Length: 144
Image (cartoon, rainbow, N blue to C red; front, side, top):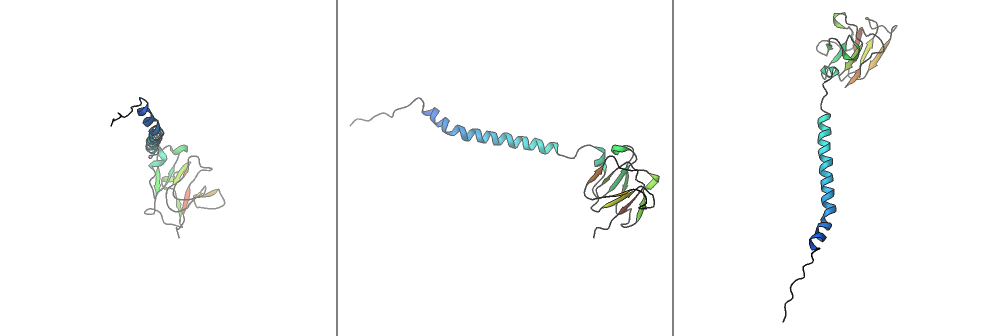
């Protein structure tokens, strides 16, 4: 009885490589896509821009356009809902951010008169780099 030696095809290793190559390429592509997703997540972190100096829960106003000059802050500790609030220190705002959870109406008139211009901005992150008029007073609406 004769034993045959197994036949070694020199392309046998290549055949196995060819069988696994598509799977390896897919895994490599997924790895690259995942890595780029991590890079994207790092870029989405809070930007270092002046409007983000206004914290969650605050309404902020700046005398200059595009959030320039000093920041004036209001929140529910310093302002009562439903009341007309003249911006402190006589500020005339040209840019603003509403990071409260409530809507805020801004008024051209310092007595919240609807004879002048007024606009309501929704809460939870409304940014206005160039207000359509000079803002002198605000009204925070009750959240109910």
